[in-house]
Image (cartoon, rainbow, N blue to C red; front, top):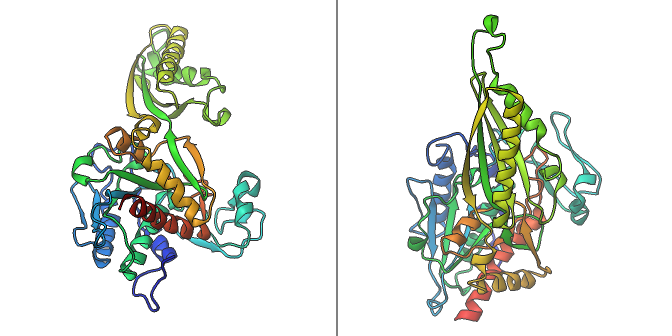
Length: 419
């Protein structure tokens, strides 16, 4: 295990994490720019400066807000294949990520965790993993925002690993690329990412949950945009003429069954999930998520949405709808199978940290889904982030340190086996 120097000038892992959480980097799904919010550059520029201070002199951020840097191989390790560690800078847009106040709960002894504001609690009954964190320090937000551990924990752990390597220059390693991306939370994180120029054989996103998890499978993801068309007219003269599209949309949403919704599915079950509605009497637009681990099951779900929309319009004579399907990402399992070392060495790295690895599936997606499809096999590694996308997001400090050690151990495995 690598040690920090006494009187190190660099921030600790926790200090880095706290400072990153305080930078407002929320992305925006409705934006037509890339990245979707200019504020993501604020963290990108901080990270470039920190990487340069750690000796990664080619660290830079481009016009798309991609931060990249290279840790050059140790002498004698130049033939080790280049690997990469990546994390995303943005936070989930539907819960505030501005003015985050990281809040420490030291020596956690079980039970619910009271957040300082808004009367919110983290319920132990809904977070059984808390029982594995007894006696540890838990970090939350204050109840008014999310925390941002998704994925600033991943960034902090990668940066902490780079710090340890900088302070232990005799430690042997191959070439490592670092990549920090914007807009992952809105499904566009690596839309313009140049895999070939990046030059890695495999990559690892540090964006997982509980300690020991290594994930090689994600949902296949599409979205449906269903626009209901009505007829507007002055309400004082609307009898037998007006068709309120917002009511047609309401009929449609109420007809969607609970069976096959996120709140009734788990494991490898897919779902249909309406996430937003906006419009007026003339036109109303409904956005829905379509998810399944099997790509062949996406079209039947889209067909079901179309049938529910048709049925809603039949109840409102004269209304109509149009429907658009957008493809986001696909299950990365099949792309990862083409490079078995990516998973094999990751699982071995976790074992060397002293944890029994858990190979899992993500009921969601990461940048790794798209990167794998682009030819860069990218499993997902735990960081400790828990209950993300909400006010009750939390992380155990012990898990963050284990995440840092896992980065180093994966590098170690690649160096040993491929030198």
